[in-house]
Image 1 (cartoon, one colour):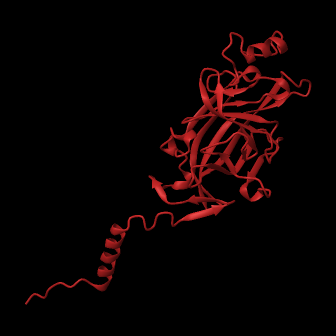
Image 2 (cartoon, one colour; image 1 turned 90 degrees about the vertical axis):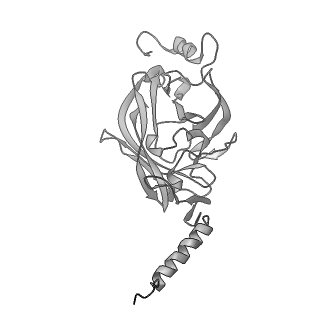
Image 3 (cartoon, rainbow, N blue to C red; image 1 turned 60 degrees about the vertical axis):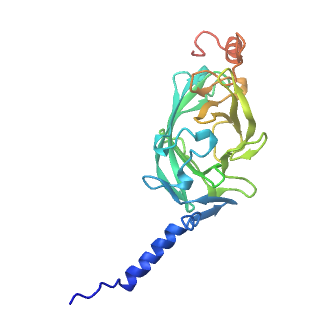
Length: 276
């Protein structure tokens, strides 16, 4: 005679847990949260292949174009005395920093420094590679948790920093989702949360990085556009108008017939000192 099949205690427990999980889908949400420097980061997996919540940057308004972090990519080209040089950024991998999942952004470009004989128009450039570890907190702000900048020239020492080096009272926050004028960020502050770039945008985020905790050659002003991220880097040292931008033009240009870059070039450049 056939006996009725009886589920084992193990399978009964498994089925009960499965039903409970279906009834309470949000039970585990936010369970894996890490607090770092007063900010909370969620490491729940939200996108394939195994991209964790804190490593997905697209919920920040300035990087919303990159729904797949693997598609993160940007190019900026030199203008002024930096013409002919460029800076590129791509997604490299995911990494853990302080228990927080980060997107590692690989940057490669040319690092400018003044030539000894000149402090305005003439520069020398050194090829470098850099790795930036960015993480997004639960409020969609982006933080820089580690950076390594390595010049190709072995005579130039590398520049590096980690959240573990953070002095008291400073922050890892670098790209706020809802920035405010004057707000402190990593290595600087917000100059304008609704800035203008010629006729390109009147809602650019403008950040002045003038207090970086590593030995960068000088201050840099970064311009970001909602959605697409970095638009330009301005290295306006000693009243120069030089840097990198998406359209090879200075971001602070005006809509007048003769913009800021044209005026500066006429005042400072002679024969071949500046390249278009």
